[in-house]
Length: 142
Image (tube, rainbow, N blue to C red; front, side, top):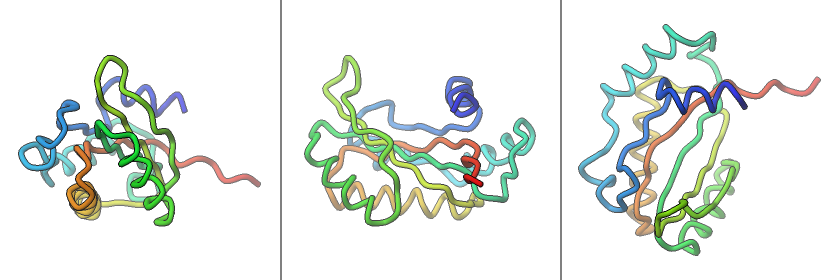
């Protein structure tokens, strides 16, 4: 997925908040609807993607307890999310859960998804839901 990696590195279509500080991202550093609207405008201006159609959306959770994230991963799989990885964050006493799913969003629907994930993390005492990234949806096999 070179396009996706390039976008993450450039910061074009990624919003990650919290700076890997568990708990703080849950209350003071939530992604605003205004930032999502700006992200969508940026994607429309700078990518060839159909921003109104299905894209590959990745979502990130962080916690110090790997087992807590494993439980969350299992639950999220039942909600049709694919587990990309569950790994230690290099140089930090944290673990990262990365999930993804192809779906179409508007800034408003993505805002709702973020609220759902903030609440998911809070109910399970997960350190933080830290945001999302986006890339083109994989081509379907013929």
